[in-house]
Image 1: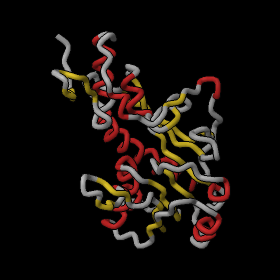
Image 2 (image 1 turned 45 degrees about the horizontal axis):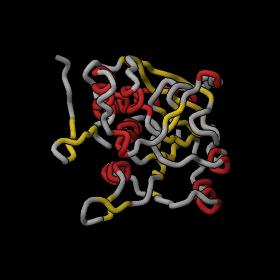
Image 3 (image 1 turned 120 degrees about the horizontal axis):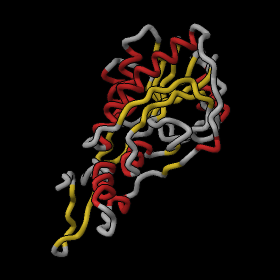
Image 4 (image 1 turned 30 degrees about the horizontal axis):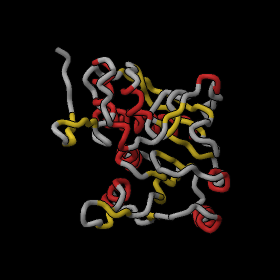
Length: 250
């Protein structure tokens, strides 16, 4: 199938690479604009843009806004599917309607649980032992589309958000190919989410890493694991900020 891939963060890279090795055809990549980073505020490409360049994808778009003009640009590709993974924007209906089939999203939780921007972090912070990835048929509402498939995995006792994200990215890449193959064979039935079971998580902020020492040891350990590598867990010690990256129970 002919695909246009929307993504930004490192979490999306594995899926793009898996697509490039499959029988499907990636026509173009859409990612966030280059942003200034570091003390020198040097403009840096997104991880997905770097991966797209590495794999020789010529058509890379970085729109600030997804307006009607951009929607018309996408129509020229006559794509079968749009794939959206960790892109950072909610797509409007005019874009979702462009592909021949529909637009699909790979989300790093077992939907309808943990909709939103930081499902991996929050599942660890909450002490969950089970998570996974979900493929959905997208609509205009955040992470509320019909479910096309799921893969579950256990959260390791000492696993942090960084290592879990790496595993889920690999699992998500597998689920993407499985879902696309099923769509191509007309062998998938979208299932509505149970809205009564939905939970939501917000984008992580720096203050979310502040340790509350009034909480029990398990909760503190979960927080430290859940905010790696950003914003990172921290406290104050001798009038300085002390970052804590790993803990053990004694």
